Each structure stands twice: as structure tokens, then as C-alpha cells.
Image 1 (cartoon, rainbow, N blue to C red):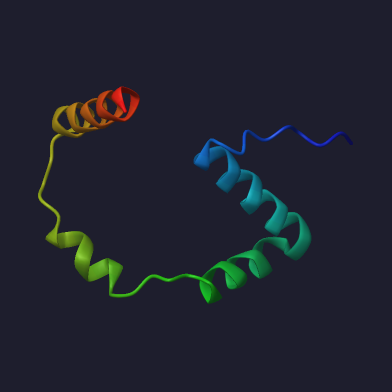
Image 2: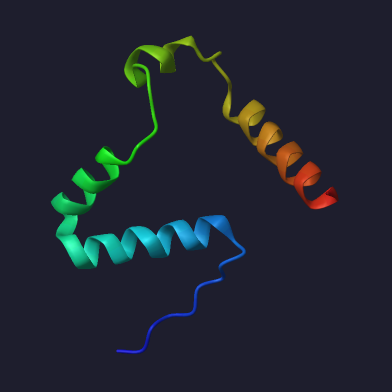
Length: 74
């Protein structure tokens, strides 16, 4: 099987390729355990997620569009 080309300058593409490689090498459970070991996360996501302000879909969409606009301007 030919290896798919990965755009290393595109962070999301590289991240996806890395996850796929981990899963292929370690299996789904092994990959999840590896990522958990190497996570620099801290805190309680379940508790913290409720601290985020409620946003409508339209507000979230506008926020994403603004982020994309500023990212392409740089």
C-alpha cells in the first residue's frame, strides 16, 4: 500500500496522520493510552467546560469565520 502524502506544514493534517500511525502501530486502546500518558493537559474538563459562555450556532460560526479571516491575513 502506498503511503499517503502528508502536508507537514498543515498542523491538522500532520496531527491526523500521527493519530493514524499510532493506531496502526499500537491499536486503538494502545494509542489512547499513549496519548493519555503524553498529554500535558491539566484540570477537570468536565467541570471547566461549563464555565464557557453559551453561544448560539450563529455566534460560533461568526467567531470561526473571524479567526479564519485573521489567520489568512497574517
